[in-house]
Length: 281
Image (cartoon, rainbow, N blue to C red; front, side):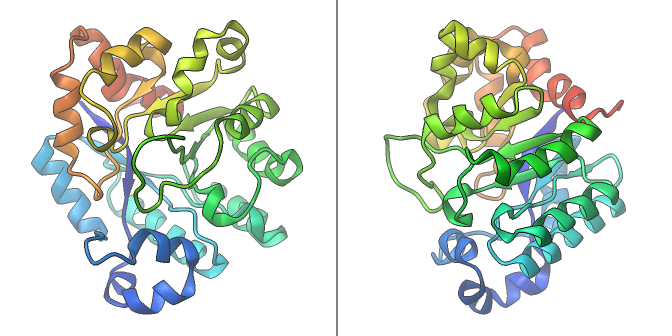
């Protein structure tokens, strides 16, 4: 069994009307203005799961600025998951910059069966992740239901790419320190934060923090899995692809070709995420 903890889908009409949505939402424009950008509906994700031999996937939002777009995509994610039980697990988008409307949307989605919130993009959504009053209502909802949040993390060095963002590592650390009892998934290997878990105070504070491998082959060489295991341990690592940015099997092959023992690969492929979102399959 393998669960991909980091995938994205969009409603078909948004894909067809791409040019309209480029003008509607700044996050959308950042992610999809290039002619080479890829958007897929739920059917394509299900086909990819079958092709790659992956049992199921977490489907994430994308950190929209526009409240209407956020709600619309959330509805599509929730509906897609309800039509594909045990194959898709919905994480719904939140917009902390939208005030009371954003909190109501988060509550609505949590009550409709969301398995978590995210992926959030503070750089594009124009809010300060380390501003505790902005985030505490969302984190309270998640804590009450024992559910995680996924945060987009970017590397402070290396090449630029659409959607990279510029949220600093200290900002993420401050956020974790504000909510130490919440489950937090840092996307894209946490943008380099795992190294700092060698500091005893960071390791202690990050007891509920996990790292996913989304888009790993675009960022790091294949040694990243074994190095990450040495830094934080495989109990804190999650297999995620970032499909459709990258095909799922490319990331999975990186993991399978690593030097990790099979038991640890299983932790990364499904055991850890199952515990995080409390599913029993």
